[in-house]
Length: 455
Ligand code: FAD
Image (cartoon, rainbow, N blue to C red; front, side):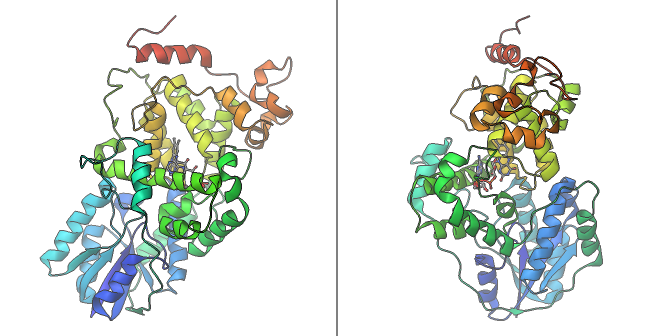
């Protein structure tokens, strides 16, 4: 008998409960596939597509070539493949995004109509979305309460190694061509090494060298103080369960702070699962009265890292050059778009999602809503990040800004955060500020109060 394992956001072979479930289901052959589905493939930006392509290719190596890559609409490809192989069951990690959950319902139905079982085991999270509820049986609205419940619940241990006898499945030419052309697209940044081996190496380096200082270094974009694991977590090259198991023997504020960040990822996934519409619409109605500006040249300046605010510009240039941006700078850049340029958050979220190699609709779009004041944050809209004081505080020597904004390399130390204070020749081609932060902050607050903007 044959079972079919369909990989999606779980591009790894170790610590994969769905693989164990597929092997246990038949005690016999397991076919394993990834589907390049145009519905998802075409809507991902070039950078995210390239990262996914390299990650799929790395997974093919992990599976010693037994992973086949197929092309087409998953709703047809999976039932057809399962029938062709004579599979009695199809195994997946449960998908909880709005698109993935909808697609899976259709695939499961098509399979069941053909007498083939659909088996969901595990999710991309330590504790799957929807599992944790408040005493009243509802979802959590604020992070601190979610995190407490998440800690108390605890995560299951890693799934052990599985002995598998593989069932050969041939890859489609169209799928291999799609992977190749995604990797060869023009203007791609240098991508990190892909695959579960690379993810584990990065994790172990971080554990050995950086976890102890994580709580203080994580906010500093000028330091390599964070794990850099988000692109791997995104494609499932590593699972948070693996990380939490390793952290069981670690203690200290660095460890606690890191676990808390993993919990944020799970919180946002839970919120999205419960409120699928919040992917692209305000989660709360608190700011229903807000008026936003139409996008124009200021949006282009933000996208190109030419706002005249060094920290914002450094972040946007880091994003375009590498497909990644430091968390602190993501917050400052998002605040600038929503509160200095008065643009609705989905405009920025879409731009990020297309360019981030860790681009994830739950973390990205709820990260944006947190900053915009429309999401889960208990903090009010009137928290407006000041890009200059944020720069001086978190990039005190200006190293981060100078790395990404070459026009400011001649300015030493924190002076790089305020080039306009230089008396002559400071700009070296660097743009003037497109808006005055102090003025725009007031405009935002005034709109919040429902009043008109000051002159
Ligand atoms: P570390 O500091 O090493 O953290 C470890 C892991 O915890 C991360 O890999 C990530 O999985 C998780 N994590 C950390 N911070 C957060 C957070 N604030 N929210 C949710 N999860 C978190 N993260 C994404 O993975 N994909 C996105 O598309 C994304 N978009 C964002 C957009 C905005 C506007 C903001 C403010 C944040 C966004 N984040 C996103 C969260 C965070 O910026 C990244 O997870 C983090 O910068 C990744 O770097 P790291 O792996 O070195 O993180």
